[in-house]
Structures are given as structure tokens and as C-alpha cells.
Length: 255
Image (cartoon, rainbow, N blue to C red):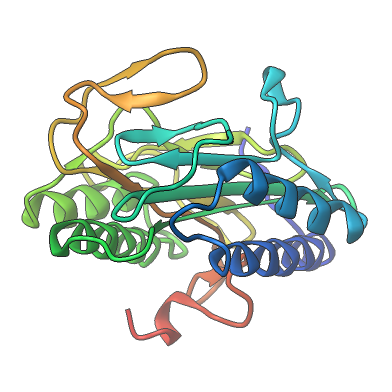
């Protein structure tokens, strides 16, 4: 069942989103050649717990870290480790937290040092895919309008949408109904209503969309590089509100 949040609950999700935004903004400062994802994980964990929140990912179905750190061909669920990041890598940073009983979930992909133009374009188009999708989060629209818009933009730029993974509802639980695919035909699925909160997260590959897994890590089958971008967003009576990008709405940020 899709849950509709009331004003008090939404305000709690805003607070969780503001905290997560500050964590992810801080982590960007540390991404550099020679840095390790295990240190990024430690920084995120300390910031979250010092603020009186709880990392959503740590212990979730046995996941061993507070941060997912996914390098190059790793789509999602990369486990932080002590391998130094290398100049030219791209790193997906995905984090979630629970504050006062309410969840926030967000991710971005960032270049490590100087990266190639083709990999910069992949990161940029993936972020654009998010904004194309979230622009469809309007009262009375259909759920599938989101994924159809993501897919159309990705494919028009020569990329493929990862299909084995999707976005999701979010609230008291990290993963709630509904699932939000990043592909498909428009005009299908539940109608969108004010108070719905969704984590929209395009995962966009330079090659094919098929994936393998070696446990937690999900990697592209052809080992093509992939980027990931995610925010927790709210359906309102007007423009969608991005809860993990404080004070910004999709219609106000020039995307």
C-alpha cells in the first residue's frame, strides 16, 4: 500500500533530508585520488550518529556499512574498502539515514580528480535523467510517467537504463510501495497524489543494461561504466519538492 504523509510527517522527512544533504555535501570534499571509500564511510557514519540519527544501510539485510560506494562499473551496493581511489575513476556515493523515525535516501556520482569528457557527460546526463523523471511527479499523473521520461532522455543521449533496479517509496521504511522503474510506457500505474514520497534514482550505463552480482555489488554485465543519481522527493499540489535538496524544488533549480 502506498502511504500518504501528513504535514507533520513531511516536516520530519524534511529534517532527515536536510541532515542527509549535509552529510553528502561533506563527503564530496574528500573524494580525491588516494582517498579510500572506507574513510568516506567512517566520516558519514560519524556525522549521522553525532546528529542523533541512524544509518539506514548499516545492517540492512546484513549490509556491513553506512555508505554504499560504487566505483566505475559497479551500479550500486559497493561495500567501502581500503583500496585507494584512482585518478579518472567515477564514484557513486549512496547514503540513507533515519532521523526521529523517518527516512531520507540520496545518491550522486562524482569524478575522482580529472576524469574524461565521456565520463563527465555520463554523470551529467544521469543527473538530467533524474530531473526529467522528477518533473513528472505531479498531482494526477501516473507513476510510469516518471520512468518513461528517464528512459527517453537516457536513450536519446545514447545510454541505457539499468532495468533490474528501481526507485521506491520511502517514509518510515527505506523501501516502501510503490516500486519506481526507470523505464517503461507512460500513462500507467497508480495516480500520483500529494503526500506521496518517492526515492527517484536513475542508474544509467554507457553500454548494456544487463547486470551481474557477486553478493552485494551489482555490476554491469559488459563492465561498462555507470552513474547513479537519487533524491527523496514529495508530490505536492504544485511543483515536486526535493526533500534531500533543501529549499529547492524541481521547477526552481534551472534543470
